[in-house]
Length: 459
Ligand SMILES: Nc1ncnc2c1ncn2[C@@H]1O[C@H](COP(=O)(O)OP(=O)(O)OP(=O)(O)O)[C@@H](O)[C@H]1O
Ligand SMILES: [Mg+2]
View 1 (tube, rainbow, N blue to C red):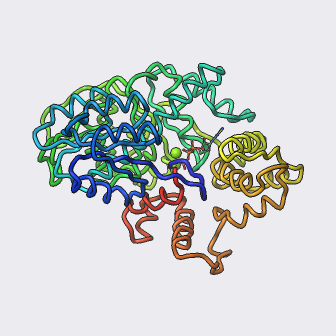
View 2: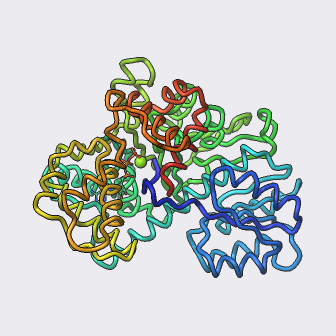
View 3: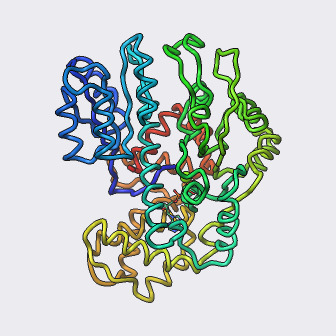
């Protein structure tokens, strides 16, 4: 799941560049549904000016434009923001340009005519990857500057022994399965493994298996050839192929549909990638890291997950303990987050009162570190300065619905949108975070659920 900062969210900022007003507006309209903040530019010059003024996360640009064309824009934009996601839109028959573009650091390309679903999937993927790349870049800098190995704070012995495993396997190419409840730091560990590892400068892709529909996930991972299925308008390399020599992080790997599980197993056994609709196979060298908040052993027992795949993924297992099993980390993390939020919100909160500490220590923290971080953020914003007191925690509590159960539920005075959000959280909680089941219960698709969750949590 992406970073949650309830209440203080930031949508992805996307810049759409095309000299044809129709195309520009159509793309912008489709993307504004993600949801994202979408800006537009008529040409490369204007786009470059905007990128220098505002930090965009992703650019979607036409290739053929008068003046600065898409490829030149890509080069210039990368100089300003190296981690930016960049998607090129090509006319029919310009695939060669697109391939050149990928070599110059474009995240992806799309062929006209643009398909809504494909556009959204490609842009979301470019955005997620640029975010992760930025974070890896930050971490790398920290490792250089402070010798801080991973940005993972802890004073718990239990956690320290987990981190020793992380250190030890980071230098190898072993497949690692990272497990733990939601918000325990799985993504953080995956990033640390990449930064510390020998492939840290190689290609890196993160795929959120829960964010993709069943039919999309396979073509995202393995690629397809043009015409392989309805909607396959152009050849696509697939992430495993693109990541040759690098690392792929399969987040929420417990959500993979059965058919894709079989294909992934074959890849892990042989290193072979076969694009959908292709007769040829190709051997690639990719390190796989995977994470899930599901109990995969239980999924195997229930017949929902292939046992052989589980073993292949679980070569090294990193199990992150829930926060309630390492209470000594609560105050350490709380104080760290106070500093972080002070910097973020320009506040001057100095710390926690003794009783506030006790209350924090006694909570169950079902949402783990993420929930603690959100609480601290809300409290820091509300208090602004001085010490955080117990009353502040109670203010936090009125807004904290992660503990909400059907029993506690009485109709609050909320706008409909909020009510919907809380209901989604409630259902997710009931089904222990299983998004496939939750989507089913709510009568919406997994992608719609994913978007709604993303919308709730912001970046
Ligand atoms: N030990 C830690 N030190 C500092 N920050 C942490 C630590 N553990 C988690 N965090 C922070 O808590 C938040 C949640 O962590 P992360 O996204 O890695 O969780 P996750 O296990 O991947 O959750 P999910 O299963 O919901 O995707 C992030 O903001 C992360 O930076
Ligand atoms: Mg995660």
